[in-house]
Length: 293
Image (cartoon, rainbow, N blue to C red; front, side):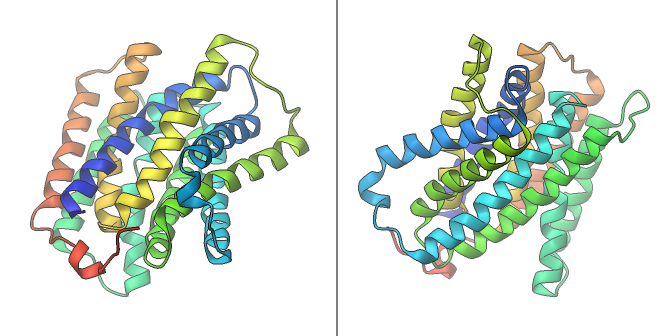
């Protein structure tokens, strides 16, 4: 797989995840956040494990440990976002989580002990401006819900970098499937401690759970580690910068959260940042020496 194809796959994942804020907002009207995490990732694990059984059944302890680690990070991401969604809109949540694009290269500076390339710095500046136009309106205040969504962005950056490290030496398909199971286990545990676990009572609740499980989790979190093996953490984070645009569009269509000229301008800046970051990128698949599994 070339880096270009990997980045295109990641864009489809970004689109799928753009629907998640709408679906999570719907789901929270019916069940608690930990309950929603447990059902979402539990159903996603069941679907992917059954469909891919022959390719994932022979799992080793290394994959189990790695899956448990990134499954825990996934749980932290969505705990932060779901609790944040209780106090902010789906559009704002998508925009704030989009700041992942800033945290990834900043973390890479400390990991690699070298500054990012000029184009990466420029891309970060442009995407920050875009996110600002999308969020800083009408005296935007950083309330507790917004802080939690930003925390989700930090966990998301950690997830991207950790996944990139693990996929270099493991079966990406197994990692993608079993991380879902562990995220569900953490959701079940916290649901029993802090909530009363139950199934959705309404049609919208079931639509939310099934959409999150199949589209956002079964597809998104299995395809991501596969595609990420052939690209860079910076490219991954910039691809996911489109997520707030998709979330805003879906929120506008289905939750009637209105977008103005300022928001559209912010979206255009994010698109520009993707173009800037993609200029002159080498195909990394040859450098990684990956094998088809």
